[in-house]
Length: 342
Image (tube, rainbow, N blue to C red):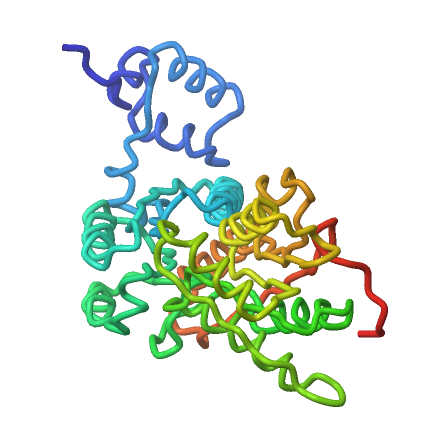
């Protein structure tokens, strides 16, 4: 079995001390450029791989962070992860990614696994199950390990952790306002994530916009579901019963499902029904017609989440931060043009 090259092996070949090798690899100013170059060349030739675990024993840091996300199917979370990894790599951090699959049990198991891997800190977006139950007891247990945690997207305000979120309320409010200012009078809110913090905020934004409409409030129609198995039947029944002419979907997938169902039923989008979704993903951009969306700037969420965690690692006593990133309404061909001033 092949063995790993060590600092001692390189020291013997170059006939220098192990401390010289270590300082050269760490780019210490105490070591000459010539010696550093010799050490780097030898490391490359022998295939030396730094032992981060051994280094962590000395520095008390592993330069590794853990991430727990509900899934990677949603384009939003995939982009968040890209933003985290891109920002973390700038500072030499390694990212360990785990998926809860929206399960409370898996979420807790993943957190313990990351702790056992001696991560310096953890970024987490909570599972649907834990947010539905409202049971954050496992997080209180994790706090006992003293590891910095930053929540992002799906958060719980009752926990003493830093957080990074999107202005879901404002994004939903603005999208709803655009729909009724473009002529829609019977606007429905469509949500498969009603039990999550983001789902609740988006619903509140929708309801608030309807109530604050100039002159008189509009009726609300909330279509909440947990599975797409009977989506078409549920959606089509509400659509016909209430003669809906506007749809605000809480995520990208439900917006695409509603768009496809409308066209299968013979409705013209956007002439008869306008549709807006959340998340500016590839499905929204390639849909026919292209889908108007509330963009959540997912990569920015990922980058900012890492920055907040990094700051927490260097200053554990700093005041808790709750960062809110502005969303953006991107209008495409699934919505009618405005005819009223916003």
